[in-house]
Image (cartoon, rainbow, N blue to C red):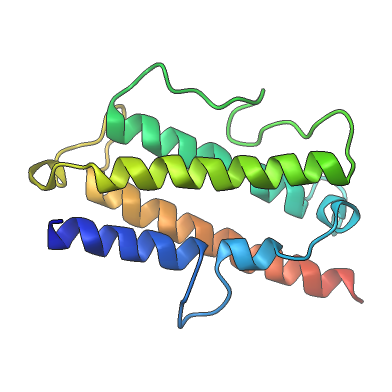
Length: 158
């Protein structure tokens, strides 16, 4: 595998799964969080952990669509950017939405692994950013929201 693709995968994986020197990656941030905790909001009109999980899953799907230039790829839930929470919000629904995030990560990882290294600096489909920047960006996005989740967990304990 091309070294540039390997580096993209390494950065992508560190932000989501670990091991990572920078702290808890996204998957680790939601480990052990219950549905009740995932629904907690620090204030009115503020996002919950569950919101953030669906948001990060949504953007993994969008980046995959951009990388593959496939208009047929769509997120399986209603709502763009901040998908709607399920009608029934229980542990089973929370497990399904965590699995959705996991699946979107796996699908995007596969798309990254199949990238043509010659196309990395080419503009991604329907984006002003190049392909490699999309991958660095989605990894940064995971880390940004992992940090938010860690803060929400701390605030919840107060």
